[in-house]
Amino acid sequence: MCVFGRAGAFARAGRDLMAKRPAAPKKSVSAANLAALGAERLAELLMEAGAESPAFKRRLRMELAAEVGPGDLALEIDKRLTTIAASRARVSWRKRPALLSELQALRRVIAERLAGLDVRLAFDRIVAWFDLYPSLSVRVSDAKGELPVLFDAATADLASLASRAGPDIAAPVLVEALSTRLNQWASWVGRGAGDLSPELAARLLADLTRGRPRPTGKLALVVRKLADRSGDLDAWMLSIPDEDQRKPDTGAEMARRLAAAGRAAEARIALEASRPVAPPPSRWNRREPDPERPPDAWLEAEVAVLEAEGRAEEAEAARWAMFERTLSAEDLRVLLARLPDFEDVVALDRAFDLAAAHPDAMKGLAFLMAWPALLQAAELVQARTGEIRGAHDDVPLWASRLAGRYPAAALILLRRRALALAALGSGVTDEIQGLIAEAETLAAAVEDPALADHEAFVAELQGVLAARRRRW
Image: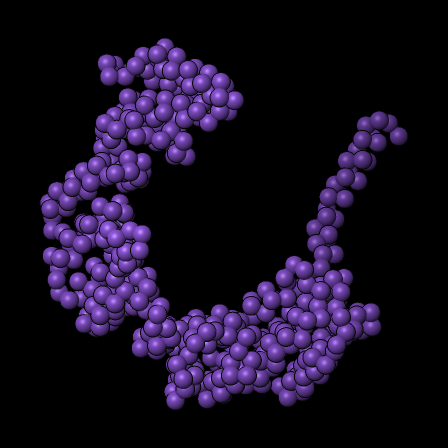
């Protein structure tokens, strides 16, 4: 055969191979390809797998039981739950993954397969599944803490099945669990409270509080979560100890919720009861101590209470006072949204003036850069150069944003950054060299007699570096 003949044969062989490639996906393990094997062949393969894996064989038995009915499936699940609960054998770290996998499989069978057939049977089994935890936590080697994570992650299934079962079925079971096994069940019910139906949460809340002592400890935390879910403000407040209600943050939260519910008089009482007070004078210092400054949460609650009381002007003044302290962009947007047209412009100018005069120049600069108000930010940098802390993480970013329109302010930021890094004693790093180069470029474009020329800045930087070396 000639050379050209062999080449043609190779080309045809290549085309034949390429033509057969579409058949390759049939070898991949997928539901469609397995179904194509036929029921008899699949049954043979499943029997082989079951013979090699007892866990897989149990799973097959549960699927077959589910085809018979929910009672048969529940019986198979009970057998395995009982075996695990009765075991006292230690589970080493080598065997732990297999146990966790089986627990996951059991949970899925309960929450998905059995729940689709009989939700009441499924709820009873998921409760029994959770009750496995105490004994497992003692005998399973679990240095990574995987076991509690597995159970915590299942609280959504617990809440879903309990809600589907309904208050009459689920509430007595969960109340009994909380009454007799509080340490574990408080965490699970509290974690899943947000996924409970409001009706079940309300029923649980009533059963846990009606005719009972005021809840404390872990039970109080559960009651608080259930009260949140059911919207019962009085029960929520009942779960908070009296001494905690006098704390500014807690009292502020109570006042805020009461104000939102239209209970302004009660909100005012809660707020005033938690107002920060100055500590009493010590025996060594008879001078009257300064009053404690309220936390931000308390000030926000005060605004909400004033608004609930209909004292709009005082509420606005309080909100301005809070903004002046915190420089919160969110608070400013609320203020601006309440103002009629054109008045918001005046208010915005007032806010910028407050930021520019803030005792912490960096906090004021951060607000102006974030708003953004670049002109006012540049003016602050130039007016308060000595207060600019070059070590602040955002200084390089701010300099790059100001460089186009306000090069003098950007130049100040770059120089303050370089001086701060030099003072830290790291020597002439790549970052400092880059800052020097950027500053030199900006200095050539800036004509401001108030700023030193580039040579003077470099000399100052060298002096800082030399002083740092001498100290070491």
